[in-house]
Length: 151
Image 1 (cartoon, helix red, strand yellow):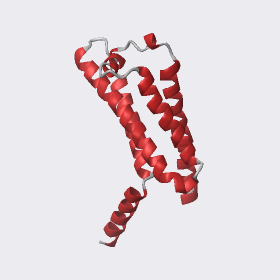
Image 2: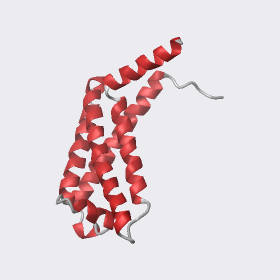
Image 3: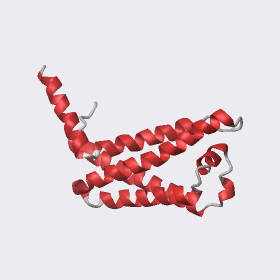
Image 4: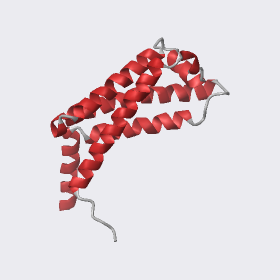
């Protein structure tokens, strides 16, 4: 027997996902800051660092935005806009890492084929998650759905 997905269940599923995505960004950022930088010798990371920004910079942005995302959750529905903005910032950082992986694939035969699509997919997850927390975006979607439903 299939159960109906109520708006309350969906709300709590999304809220729970917020904790997971915020923690993932925070822990990834801390890992980039604290680990030995010699472990980041892959062509993708070397391409990402070629712009002059080291692992500490990338890690600090992810850790800061992840922590801010977690703090935004504590404000409930009032923190949704902030939560969306932090998720979009994380998405941007991860997207830039995906671009570095794609560039590395073109220039380095030892570059990983899995890294670029993984980072691109993660960027899309954070972007989508961020957009659904922005009231202006979700209000516009709801308005469009109502207009289509009237036809």
